[in-house]
Length: 119
Image 1: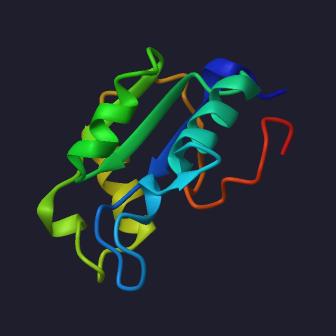
Image 2: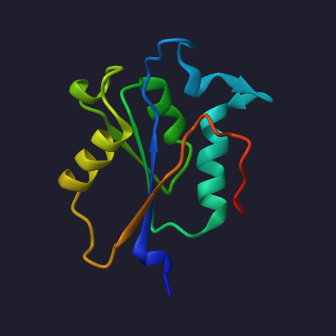
């Protein structure tokens, strides 16, 4: 059985976008869309830790509103359009000091804001 202490969440939220500038912080129903993803992750109560990886100062400020969310400043080499989510996840996995009990992680995309904590 998977326990809460075994799993964490990564929310990748790069500042730049080829088609829609600052898409992760655009308002939807009066709040930035990344808030819906963060709130769904918190409400699900299945994650030991929730990391938001970004190069955006605005995303960093949004994360400060959530006590249980850990903001990770993304390296410039992982902030361009050629960097993949896999690259970001590997960087986090290789550079964070994780408790040995953490065995799984989940990636939640900030632009999938219509999901909820049950999803």
